[in-house]
Length: 294
Image 1 (cartoon, rainbow, N blue to C red):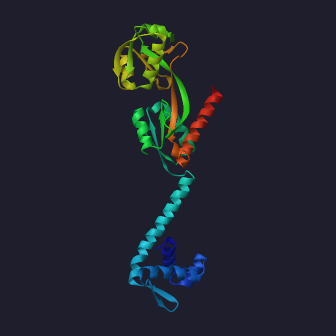
Image 2: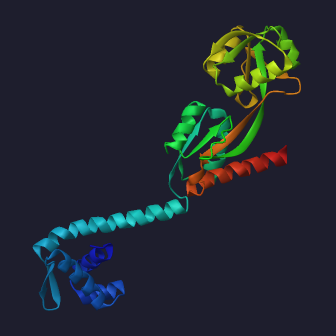
Image 3: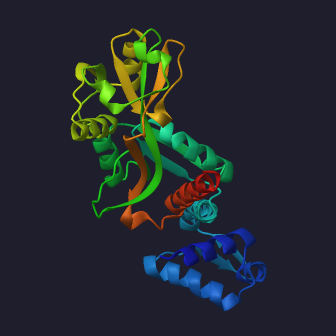
């Protein structure tokens, strides 16, 4: 049984004869006749009673008719879906990210360009975000680290300095810039091990021979900001992730020696997928606009 045979049966049933159906469809009568007869022969059934020039549905034909109508409707729906998806008029793009700060700008630009595409964001740590991408839970991912696994394609997106912030009563709060060496012995509140910001900061501090005092490890940016706001120590965060607060003061490290880089990932095998490709194109467009204004 083929879709064309079912369509032939349906149009003949609707118009009550092969000649009328052929005129409406713009095909020859023998073509329709052959398709219906092939369907009847394949299943050894009779779908029409031939009564002169008029046809009447048999019991089997009457039961097949609503099924054939549903199949025809589903064909139309499938065609519409594929056409619209191909033109990016519909679809659902699933985005993974390690935090909202880096991804919001891209989502905003993408939404303006493709307002009919549904977007969802799944926030997690770097390991889980890449696992989601690998397992097709998400389509693209935004991370603050580079992974050279050949299964993934990574596009560099942005680079941000790591800044410090202190309680407004901290001695450093009267300044806008401090040197790296001034962190010697200072109480630092650090993110958990595995945090990209922490890794980059610790690497630079070690290379400079500077040893701060780790006052606390904390598991989220929000909790880190609250701890600093209560005067428990200095915090460090990517400049893009810094949230102003009247209780804290932002500090740059002289020369901006610590930076984090943001990458946008997709599975290498899916880079030509229409939705994925459209997202990556927006990423490159934003990068180009940033370079022009830099």
